[in-house]
Structures are given as structure tokens and as C-alpha cells.
Length: 200
Image (cartoon, rainbow, N blue to C red; front, side):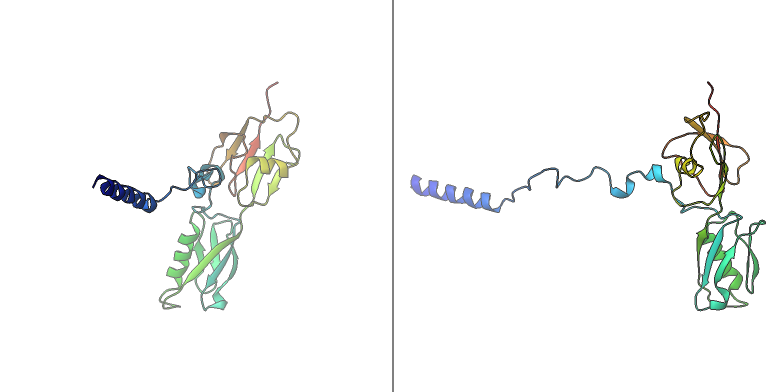
């Protein structure tokens, strides 16, 4: 009898071992990242999702099924965009989505029953760099621009340049602010960058 019980116990343990999943081997190839990919460097790279339009920006505006109302338009010095039928629409200080809604509201009723508008920035307004760089001036903005990119475009620092800090006056602000001069310091369209002189 004891032998029979021992056989049953052995069979039960064997079945349990076969039904238990074997955990996968852990190694460098299967290790999961501690941070999601979209979170890596989120604070370093900046975003133009909340970008506010300003004078000098060039927009492409598409009014669906209305080619005569679509086209490329410049934000003028007054912050306005002149469009067919509706005339001038305020763009400065608005996000692209807010501008789309403003165009839709202007067209709705008198001109179109249910207008659908899409807008995008074709060319951002330029930025300005001055101070201790070899070629100070006005340069076209590209997405993701950093201070070091801007300095490189201006042919580098002069030998007198302070390479620790940079002064930036953001578009729409009255005063410049000091920022660390690093590879992650962002430049926005319309900013004025000043590279100061180091103290010997």
C-alpha cells in the first residue's frame, strides 16, 4: 500500500512541474527599459506643440474642398493674416489650432456651412544672435534649434566669448534672461541670443 501511495505522490509532483511555466531567462537582450522611450529627454528637446504664431511666420492654410480659399500666407508686422473673402485674421499670439478655429469661425455662415480648416507653419520667423560670435546676424529658424547650433551657424565663438552662460530674450518678452550655455538650451522662433564677453 505504501508503495502505491508513493507512486501517486510521485506522479502528482511530476504533473505539477510540467504545468508550471518556466520563467524566461533574463539577460541584456530582454531587459525592459526603466523609462518609456517617449519620456527620455522630454525636458531636453522641447516642443513646438504650444508654439504661438508671430510676425514673420509663413503659413499654409487649407480649406477643404475650397481651393480658392487655400494657399500660403504670411503673418504681417501687425500680427494679421490676410485671407480671401474674410480679410484679416489675428494670428499673432495664437496657437496653430486657435488660428484654424478663427478661420473656420470667419468662414462659417456667410460663406460656408461647415468649413474645415487645416494650417501648418511652413517657415518660422527668424532668430537673432549677437555678441561674441564671429558672424552675428539674423538666421532662419529650424525645429529643435539649440544655442550651440545657433553659435555654430554664426561661425563659432570669438576668443573673448563667455562659454558658460547665454542671454536670451524670448519673442514677446521685454527683457533677456540668463541661461546655462549647454547642448540642451533651446532657441525658439523670434528669440534674440546674446553671447557675452568673459571676464579675464
